[in-house]
Image (cartoon, rainbow, N blue to C red; front, side, top):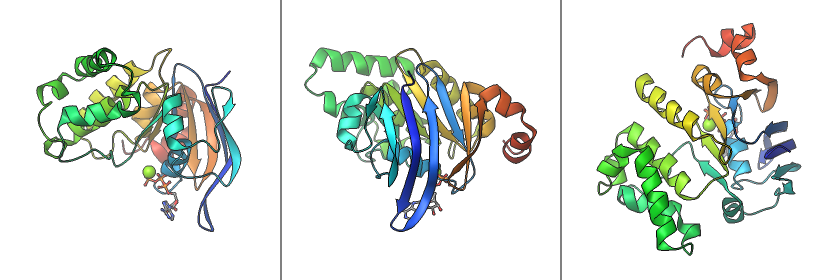
Length: 239
Ligand SMILES: Nc1ncnc2c1ncn2[C@@H]1O[C@H](COP(=O)(O)OP(=O)(O)OP(=O)(O)O)[C@@H](O)[C@H]1O
Ligand SMILES: [Mg+2]
């Protein structure tokens, strides 16, 4: 059974539709990518999956249960965790306090468990450990992305929804972040990766969808999409 199944979902802002009948699946234990140009509806779709914006029609099934009407906090507790496009860190708080906030909904799980999670994040991102007392606003773009990922990991995700982790990062930093993302996906942690950087995304994903103007235009194995002449022409030229 797929971990996430999106069935014919429509999403609107007021009367204006932005997503028109999208269906997709994310299998357990891998990376599923959604690529597409500016304004295609990628962020809208991810925000809806996280429960931040309602779907007008269609269903979202997570781990076999219909969560179409489930609130954001309850989705978080199910393990559905968004790393938003704007990162949404607390700029004046320290790195460590930002990380601790990621575990807010697990605050009763005991000091030991939270400490272990923090140690895991620091092992994955030594740079964050070095800078744990620094405020989030003083971090570089790459470090902020690490902090956003680290904070998401503190909440014990089962499905990470990543919205353009490469946004605003230099190619070398993007490469590093994508290596980390690739290593993060495991039997326990699956990933939906939204990207404009199609080359980087298709290189780490197992399966991919191309979204254009709110509709799925193409789908397939990531390796097949990367070899598709239309995808190559439209999305692989610049990156
Ligand atoms: N709050 C909003 N109110 C009204 N329309 C919106 C709102 N947010 C997004 N839209 C519209 O929905 C459509 C999809 O936007 P969305 O941000 O989902 O695209 P995207 O694929 O994430 O683009 P990008 O790659 O630039 O981040 C666009 O036409 C956009 O103008
Ligand atoms: Mg977006």
